[in-house]
Length: 350
Image (tube, rainbow, N blue to C red; front, side):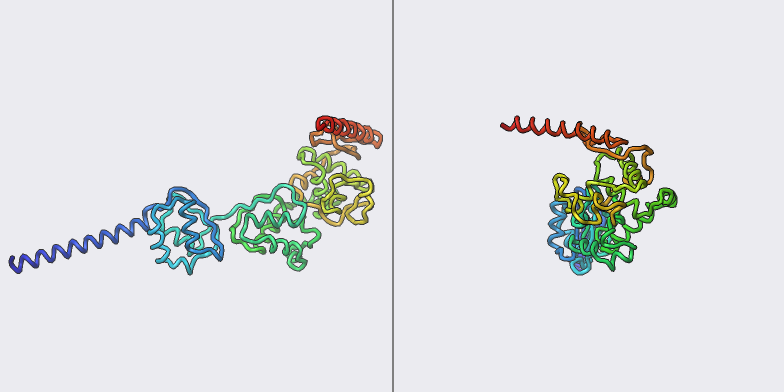
C-alpha cells in the first residue's frame, strides 16, 4: 500500500469518525431540544424542598416520560438542581426535555385556579380552602385572618374580614404569597362594589358593611338561591321597622355553629351577635356571603312579609307571613309534619 493510499484511508476514516461524532451530537441535540419527551399532560408542583429525583419520578409516573437520560442531560446543562424555582408547572405531550429544564429554571409557571365556594362560616375553613389549593400553609392564612395590623392595610379587621372575601374562582400563581392573595381579595372586592351597587346601598341607607352583614344572615337562612331576595326583604322590613331581626343564624354564630337546633335557652346568650336580644345589625358578618346574597340585599323583593319558617314539605324552602298569627299557623304545620316524620322513623327502626 502506497503512502498516498494510506493518507487517503486515514482521511476517510477521520471523516467517518467526525461524521459519526457529528451525527451523535446532532442526534442528541434533536432528542433533547426538538423531540417531545412525554406522552401526556401533567401538573408538576415544585416546593422549595422538592428534589431533582422527586421531579423525575413525578414526570415519569405522571407525564409518561419517554427518555429519562435526555431529561437528566438537560437538567445538568441548565443546573436545575441549583437554579429551579418553586411553582406549578404544566408539562404536556409536546414538551421537550430542554423546555422543562428551562421552565423550572426561569419559573415559567401556569396560573392556578383557586376556588372559594360553599359554606364558609369560620376562618379555619377559609384557611383550609386556600391552603389546599395554594403553596401557603393553613396556619399562615389563619394568622393573617386574625392579624389586625395586616388586615388594617385593606380597611378591615379580624372581626369583619368575612366581608372582604368574595366567593369566586381566582386565577393566580400557586406560589402567591399571603399578601398577594389578600391583595387579590381586595381588588375583587373593590371591583364588585361598582357605583351602581354603592348607589343601591345608599338608597336603602345601608353601608357596604351593612349589606355584607345582612347578606351573611340571608346566606345562613337558606340554601335556595331563588329565596335570597325574598328573605332579604323580610329582614329589611324588620330592620326598617326597628324590630329585632331575631335571626337564628346569628345565635348559631354565638355558639360557633355547634348547635343542631336553636332552643329557647340558646336565645338568652349575651352577645352583640344575638339578634333575639339586641335590635339592629350585629357588629360584622357571621359568614362569607355569596355574591348572590349581597345582590339580594341590594335588590330585595318588595313585599310585606315580616315572618317566615321552614316549609312542612321539608324541601329546604320556607313559608312567609305578614302577620304573627299567620306565622304561627305555618309554624304549627311544620311542627306537625316534623312530629309525624319522627314517629315514622321511630316505628321503622323497631
